[in-house]
Length: 387
View 1 (cartoon, rainbow, N blue to C red):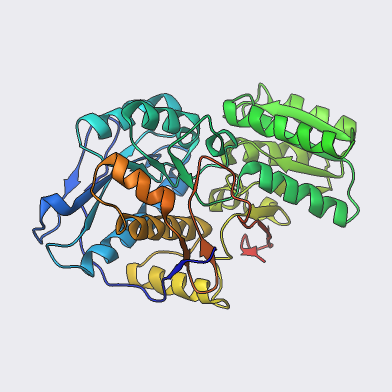
View 2: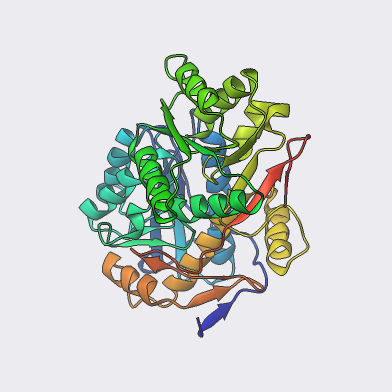
């Protein structure tokens, strides 16, 4: 990636329009400074602001909003400005599509940005395609979103396939051969299952246990999944269900006496998992798809920490992902020859990488990112993620 735009310092704060409401309402806060409406890019976002996934949703939303506010504050009233309209879907994919349509038809969104939760996968992408809008920076590891089946999707993060491959490689490195995957009977869960099978087929391995639980981690599926796991005696388990369901599974399998390794994908092992599990989170390894966010030892972590301090945000991997994604969009928008969805898509598809102090990020339109990094962190006994 030869042409790189450098982002070396944060900006200051100014207002953005935000529509943050429950499913049927739209509470709007408008900035005090009037701007040229012809220069406003309106971004629509659907994410869980209430419900079991709201920890992730609110963390991502706060950082994205602050990033756009800083960009607005750095420019005059006649320059490009950004509005973020965030609607709640309570983590229900069937609501995601309705809210996305509302953003496009009633609220005039130019693009859909930063969808979070179960609706960020197929539901969000299908809604964007139906409305003819670019689908930008969804918090999703979906392999389908990185294929020709979902044109108009712009992602910089690694996929679940990348994360699962990283986990399998790490397990082999430490001498672990018997693996298990716990997934949901949902689109994303089945995609993870297929990814695992394809990877093991490549390596001609059969020593894997596959079992599923429901998205709620209920008493109807967790005991059976735990029994299946314990009967096969795997050395390590990959958690591929959401953080709510994974919490119940971890409690069940630990109570049943499992002493092996636990791995969680980045979409699973958020701070919500640690908050729910408390000391049971200790020792769970979590893949990450953005640089380590809980330190100031690297240039990008120092930039991110400074950004968080300016806005009173607790640094997390979610805030890091939102900050990177929003910054990438801002840089792409500067290159757009107009504010139409088509013009924005063309700018997104042709934008160079952005250098965040030694870490380069770039959009990959409807295809895998061969350079997307994956790393491994682990929860310590105090519920903190460490590298």
